[in-house]
Length: 340
Image (cartoon, rainbow, N blue to C red):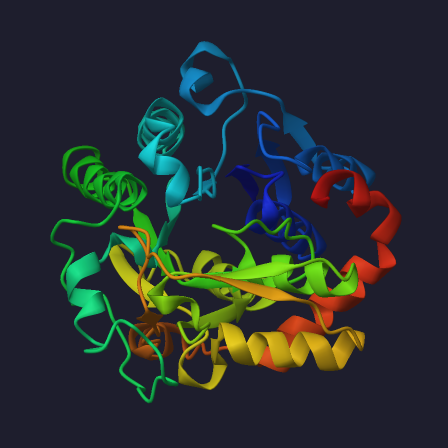
C-alpha cells in the first residue's frame, strides 16, 4: 500500500513516515522544508529509503507524481501566534494545501486522513471552563473536551483554516465520495520536535533547562498555572496505523485524540520535572499580559477514539518528557545549530 504524507519532514509527519515504513508501507513525503530543522528529518527519511519531494503544497497540482492509496495531511503552519501576521502562509499551507491534496484524492481514488487540531474550538468557550483567568492559583479541573464542543468564532486564523479544511473535506466526501478520517489532535510532543514559545513548548522547556537558559511564564498573570494535556507522538503513530488498517469499515467522521486527564500538566509542574531530570534550575521571568489567542486550559476527551478503535494513550507525561530529554541529549551538537 502506497502512502503519501504531506508535511513528511515535520515533527509528526517524519515520525509517522518512519513508523509506517517500519510497518511495511511504501511511504513518500512532500515537504518544502520551510520549518527550521526539517532538513534533518529529510536526511533521516532518506536514510530509511523514504523519498521527499521538495514542493510547496499549494503547487501540488503542477507536479506529476505517482498514485497513492492513502494521503495523510500533516502539512500545516502550526503556530497559533504566527496566524496573526503570516496570513498568506497560514492560509496557503493549511487551507489551500488541503484543497490541493483533496484534488489528488479524486484523481487517485485514494483515502484521506487529516491531522486537525484542538484549536478549532471556540476560544471564549474554552476560557469559560476556568472562571478565574488570572490563574494565581493551581487549576483544579478535569473537564474534557470532545468533538461536540463549540467551534464558533473566535478560534484564531490558524484554527479557522483547520476547521475550514475539515468542512472542505466533508464537501469533497459528499460530492466526490472521498473517504476520510479527521483527527483533532491536542498538544503532541516527543523526540524530533523543534520547540518554540508558541508551538512545541514541552521540547522548548526541556531544551532551555538542558542549556541553562532563561524562560518566561507568559500570560494569565505570568504564574505558570495554565494547563494542557500532552500526547506522545508514538501514540499518534499507533492511532493512524489502526485507522489505516480499518479504513474500509470505519471512515467519514472526526475524532479527538490527546493525552487526556492522566497527561494533563501545568507549566509550573513541567518546570519541576525538567529540573529534576536535568539537574538544572533556570531563571524565570513573568509576562502578565495574555495573547488574544491563548487559553488557560485544555484537556482532550478520547471517548470516540476508544469507542471506534479501543485506542488510548500508552505513554504518560513522564515518558514524554524523558524521551524528549534523551533525544535532545543524544543529538545535542546538531540541535545547537537549530534551537539556540
